[in-house]
Length: 156
View 1 (cartoon, rainbow, N blue to C red):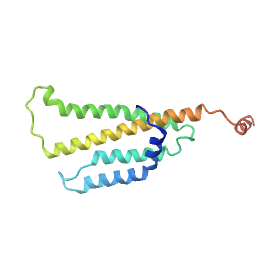
View 2: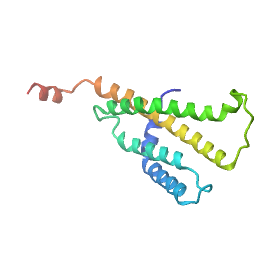
View 3: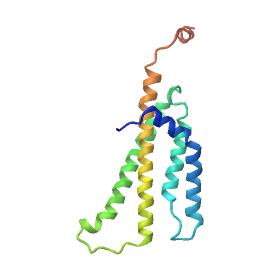
View 4: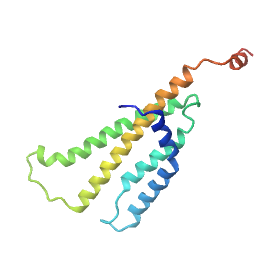
């Protein structure tokens, strides 16, 4: 399924504080530990970003115009995600595609590769969240008919 359900949107928005704190903790852990020990810089940053989107989309059902922010996030994050995905897989498969001799896989390469895969999964989730909020918010706010109170205020 390409879009999220309402329950999945609400669950992601409800967990925004936990995602923000976990993202900050992962980034701090990756920076504080010595080189080769720290892990989670990219995934922590993306988890923090997903928490920020949860904060921005709190009123996704009622806030008119929130769909524009969601479209902006989708339009900017989509190509970035595709480019990072391409770079990651190109780096992993370059030895096979270029008929080069396989290099020894080190812990640093494996650690960064796992962190990048988790970050790519999180950015894909952020894109799905933004795209779903854009569509659902537009449906609810643009297609909603004004009530009698709203129409009388518009006439005044």
